[in-house]
Image (cartoon, rainbow, N blue to C red; front, side, top):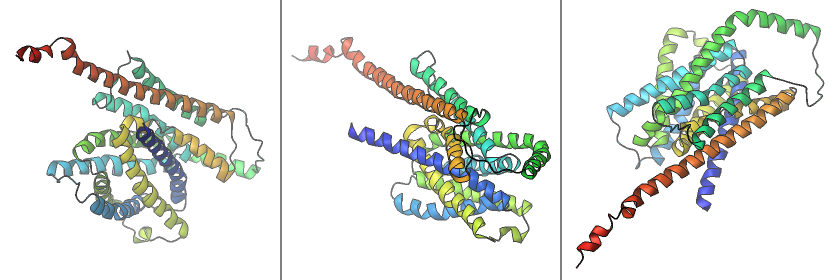
Length: 360
């Protein structure tokens, strides 16, 4: 019993760490774009750093456990990298450039719903709304997405009376900036939707591959390797200015290291481990926590106001997560009960007496 509880605690801590790092990544990536880091060079350095970190670990720690590589497995690595690394990161940066970190985080809350639909369609996730556990998973996912949407779209009255220092000139500048970017907002939405689709597909498609190829560090290393190659091919046509490849400030170095070490190295590895332990839907359902964390980080770091809508959304997210956790727990219980019944059914039908009758 103690081992089971320990595994659950490890999983919850890993998922909370995952979302904390991704929340910080929204802010760091926006900073990178603001200071002029190229949208192609940024992911190239990011995946290069992640590969340099992960490849040696994969070689030494999985040296004797790594299944043999086949052409089919390598092809799947390449395709998963195309969807989960190249397209995912590319769409995200384009969407973040035209939209905002808060909106990017809000859009990514659709990932649990998209993942749930994809996994159910492929038969990776059981969906039986006639049972209470199936309905709980559906309602919990909806509640999580709804809670994050409330945090983003509904402010409500302020809870803390923070003093806002804003001049009329600042207000005018923000209005002009908003007007200029309005025409690009639609494209930002489209790119971020593409990011969500690719992220969900990345989590769903790697689940069956990890069953055939359970070397998680090796899998992540190959994903980063093929993602790096694909971005370099794109850069050969898009980013030919050598000045764009030079790191010219400590801020640029920090954003690149955070993206490479924390997000592409730590986050992808932890996410892969979590998917292997609990499945893609359980991992994706924690995604709405990211919006809550972004709101808290913004309040602590930038002094942004906290509103009642944020608290309402947070409560809804917690309730949604409880429903999903309850649904997953009871689903396993039902499956185990059905398997036990299938094993004991021959004995109850008297098939076990045949052996005793033959004994003299």
